[in-house]
Amino acid sequence: AAGEDGALPAAAPAAFAAPTGPRPAGTLHDGALGAGGTAHRGAPEGPSIEETLGLTWLTRAGAATFLLGALFFFKYASDNAWIGPTGRVAIGAATGAALLAIAEAIRGRTQRRFVHALLGLGLAVLVTSVWASAVLYELIPFSAAFAAETVLLLLGAALALRHRGEAILVLSLVAGFLNPVVLSTGQDRPLLLFGYLLLMTSVVHAVAAKLGFRVAPWLALAGHAALFSGWYDRYFDASAAPALGDAGAAPWPDQPVEALSGPYLPLAARAVPLAFVALAASQGVLRALW
Image (tube, rainbow, N blue to C red):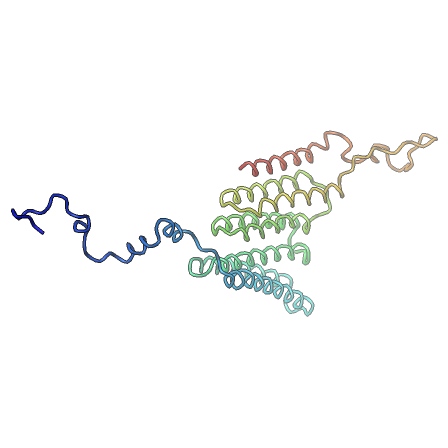
């Protein structure tokens, strides 16, 4: 109420100074929730059980079923001579490339897990096609198949980086570790083998470090250990030549004594495997520090 001179009191209540209009719904909601509610609204929601089962595991199971069906078709077509070796490999390569193209085309319009499954399936079909062309049908030399598998590995790492999918990177890493096993020529070439492994795992560690992946680095270290153990068991021989007999002749007279010693008996011959062990260990330490 105004005073006798018509002026308002000097200290008006705060309730009269505040706006009397209705507050927006968002303002009322913020006031009800408080700071904790706002932080809760901004936190990302984890996937539900239905999403985990329906989009992740069922999608992966469907991709694995499709891949097994494609392998069964190749086997059946081979047994019945429906399609020649070149046609079978061409169909496999075209199918793998088509799956990669479809995954890129629907990217952004469907679930990420489904896109990742298509990409992984396409890479697996391409890897299988290259393996079949070299091992089953002998259409291309092993060196060309090895190079093609390496290119597919790098493509898988690039797709994992583009789509931020660790499953793609893990599949590419597994295929990369199987590459020197299924395409082995039986010759001991440690420089080529260990150089390939270091290149492959360096790419994997770089992508995993950039995107914060957890499984791929451990898989890289485990693959290093497994392949090195297999190579060591098969090729590493540092035994000395057998002692000469009483008559001064070697136990195998058709070969000189020097040829009977292990290929890794000289210390210089052990430089490549020792360097690989040191570099692989340093790679793991640097990744852990990162």
